[in-house]
Length: 228
Ligand SMILES: [Cu+2]
Image (cartoon, rainbow, N blue to C red; front, side):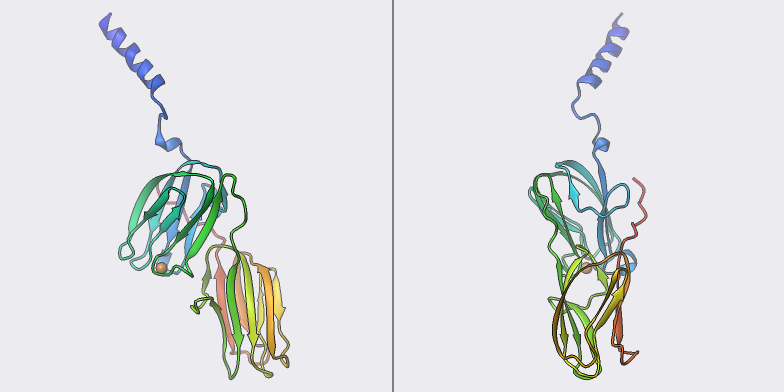
């Protein structure tokens, strides 16, 4: 029976086809610029931020939600990006191999950046370097190395804060989930704090003058997943 042979042939072809469906690849979601915030995140199917992955082929759904940020992934064998000027939904199939990968926004590369490792490479991402400053005068700030202000921490939750307390009338006091560190009000000089931050809101302030304060957010909440 010819018809039966055709059906049998189709079944054999299906069995012999390599890698039946790309949908079998693990799916990751990359988000950037939700509500135009300076936030960037790569998360797995459980909504956890990606820190380390097994080597292999992945499907990355990129949700570029802003007209002034983009999502740019690079590392061994991979260099893919969305447009800075447009919102964009993109799906990338990428082969990740042993190494360290970086995702960032090309318009704000020092503040909107994260890294993850793959395969045999397991060292944790480098700590984020920050500078905290108070005084002279009624001034307080917490900034990245390139002096842009910290509002949302992306990337490593490990931070090294170089505190420069330039006044004997105010102090630098950082508090938030798991952290309560301060210089003395009468103290003037440098301090270096190595901290691991958790998801939530952190406030830095002077204990002498209540209005002298600033705040930033460490995002731990997964973004809602888009349709796949
Ligand atoms: Cu940006």
